[in-house]
Length: 312
Image (tube, rainbow, N blue to C red; front, side):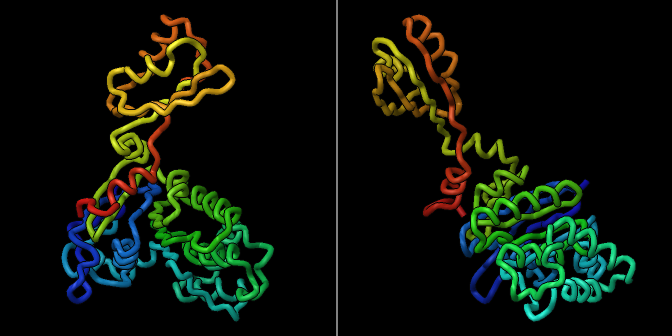
């Protein structure tokens, strides 16, 4: 069932069109990656979804009700972690979460229960009574996430949640996002493409204010560049020449090591050459050590759709 729907949403800043007729829908329980280069319109779209900005054209529906009509009720059901993660650094973590709960007009029992669950979910028990200003960047991000989920939102909007974190901290936050996505809808914007690949089931890609891709991660990866790479390692006569001559092969990178020939073939994605290679190896009496087709990368998809000259 659809939770969030954008219909031809447009936002302008003077002469600049930041978001241009963007349309998509997100169902309940989905973790959706929202990608695009700097200035593509990601943050502006998220700010409209969270009602920080109003669209100049089009409409946004939350659970079937226009945001313009839902107002405060929709805000009660949305959690938002903006890119800059604004925190009151002089407060203790406990004080800050209590303050957020009061801002959200949560009754004391609900606030206490929500705080306990958010603290446990984000793993901030060790710093609960410490000043926020003394925390590491990773713990500050966790505090921001705890504040965003304190009221148990149906929709969680995360804008660059791992910005500035070290690799270990990124892994921790990524694991946390995956856990949060099990019982709520998550819209995740990030420049770290590997994060999206690990936690999201669907991708939205925006470029120059327009949506240029929308689909399951595996489907978009399968379309990356329209080509695949097939790694073959074999021992025998004429390996490189025969593999390079296969129909559909556009390039063959060859190396020799310890009597084995290693070939990386580039071929059209529409054709799976592995069965033919296997039959060829058997017919030629080769010893086949490896036959592997590499999946397209998210970087390939991103560059193809948002690189210089990509259609807006």
